[in-house]
Length: 229
Image: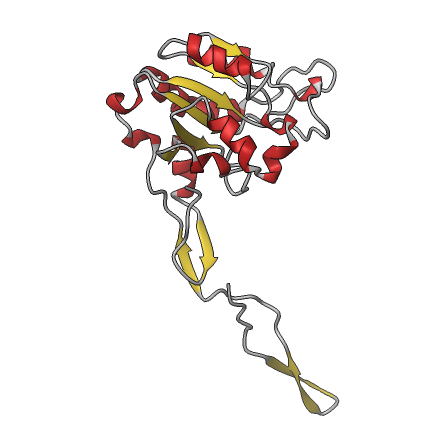
């Protein structure tokens, strides 16, 4: 983006005119960022029996003592996309981050409290796993029936997530056929679960929340916007 300075103004000081520089940054062009394709473009034929890796933003606030959810707004925001996938017969692998784990798994950052609330909102069981990659996930996906949802563990328990390491992204993608990003709060970050997996899963599409929010986001730039997929 080019920085364009506003024209200098002036004032009179001590009988002589002194130029005043403006540090206001004015972008050259206003560009709208629009989604290429959303989950709503996928039909039942596209989704039935398919394993869909969904990255949502379930980073909800928890009571420090009881770990009870104090605000479920982000969970409710993910429901339309999840319901659409489940109603069309997909097997959903749902993941997110929660909090800021420093070095591996920490009980206070587990996604366990999310499962019962999500189950209530969807009106169907949610199976919570203790990892987001590996043999446990592979077996659960094989055993899952169409229209069932598996809640994977906090993806940031692995430091490779925020480093966007290719091998970790490949492991996340290993048990899925296609990808849906509905994590507006983290979609701008090039992490393994938001950017890395798109190299291995096609199509990679936006969820309803991401599509809705991006549809009214304006960004400053010099040319056409690019999108995460």
